[in-house]
Length: 76
Image (cartoon, rainbow, N blue to C red):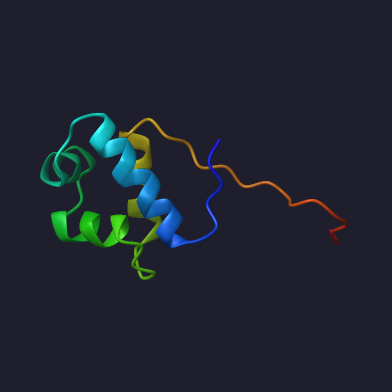
């Protein structure tokens, strides 16, 4: 499991998986129903990337995003 601390980490993960699968940015954008510019911004860690579209790209790549509590005591 890869920890995602910021948008740069998310973009790096997406770019690496896209390349592992042999997709171009244009192909992945088309498969995901997003624009190439959006995908480029996402892969480059642009902080204004829309989370809904990012989740669609992750799903297209067969990747899930999880959130879990960090160690320590947390208020409910």
